[in-house]
Structures are given as structure tokens and as C-alpha cells.
Image (cartoon, rainbow, N blue to C red):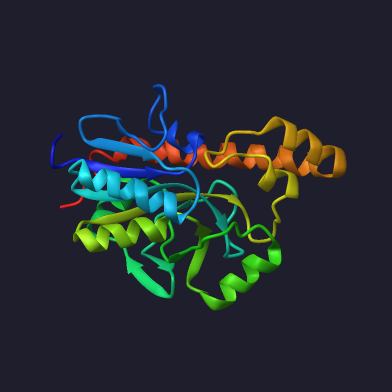
Length: 235
């Protein structure tokens, strides 16, 4: 494997499919192209950290956290692209590689905000939880569950690190209970819990449909970045 490869950590199948059209496998290194390798980790920092370690052992030269996020800043809307300058996780600030970030931003035609990204261990699903997190970290525009663990692995290996995320749910939107309990670790629907949840909370249906449209907008934003990943490389 080429030592110049970028290793991409992706939590969800839908996020991975913005980079790779082949058959997905989980927790295994997938060769996306000559310059990109990927592991679909599943949600959460422990899974993301394990995926990052797999990529490091395969010989990648940089780590990229790729996927979706929840908005913290009220300005963030569904589909907004974020390339944060730092990740806040476990009380520490983990900076991304500034030169790599700048190289990517120069190739994107649209303006992409900086700021920070919070990384957490449990879903930040309610409006109150998002507000509390933003109050503690006002520089952070969004929240995810994987980037902090990937940042830590990159720092330990002294390798460049970058985050590309797109917003699904804004700060003013709570995730329906049916949404958080009816998918597996890779974002695949669990139909029986979903149907049971809708029977108990039929009012969740419009919110779930709206969330699906927002997810598609976020994935489309990631697809717009995908062509630049191999040309905007860390130095």
C-alpha cells in the first residue's frame, strides 16, 4: 500500500457511499482509490479510534474524519459544509493540519466557515443538549461522535489530520426518539423498532421524513467535496 494514502474514517454506510460505490464492509480497510483508503467504523469514539488504528497499521500518511454532524451554531443549516479548524474532545483542543485545510478550501468554490467541532460520546439529540454544549464551547459550530478519537490517533502518530463534515440537524431541531432508536451503529434502519416507535409516537413521522431530506442534503454536500480529496492533499 502506498505510503502517500489518506486514511478516511467514516461512521455510517450512507456517508461511506459518498466516497465509494462498491460493496461496503465494516471495520475493514477498503481501497477507495490509489490515494484513499477507508474504514466504515460505526458510530462513536471507540469505534472511530479502532478504525483510525487500522488505517495507521495499513500505512496511511494522514487521517481524515468524514461524514455528517449536528448543528450547534444557530447559523448552521442542513446541508452546510464544515471544515473546522479544531476539534474539542475530552477537554482538549485538537487542531487540524492548517496547510491541508487551506489547500482543500482553495479548491472549493463556496465559502466554508472555520471555527471548531465538538466531539462527544453519546448522541446530542435535544435542543437543550445542543445549547448546553454550545454554551460550553461557543467556538464550535457543530457536533459529532468520531472526530475527536481520530484526532487523537493522528496526533499520537504525528500525522496530518483533517475533518470534513456536513450538517444534518440544525441547533434548533431535536432528533425524534424514533430516529435515535431505530438505526444500528452504521445508520441502517432497524425496521421493527422503527415501526414500534412510530406506533407509540405517530407524531414523529413528519419529523422523520424531514430528517431524511436533510440527510440527503448533507450527503450531497459531501459528494461535492469528494472530487477534491485526492488533489487537495497534505504536504
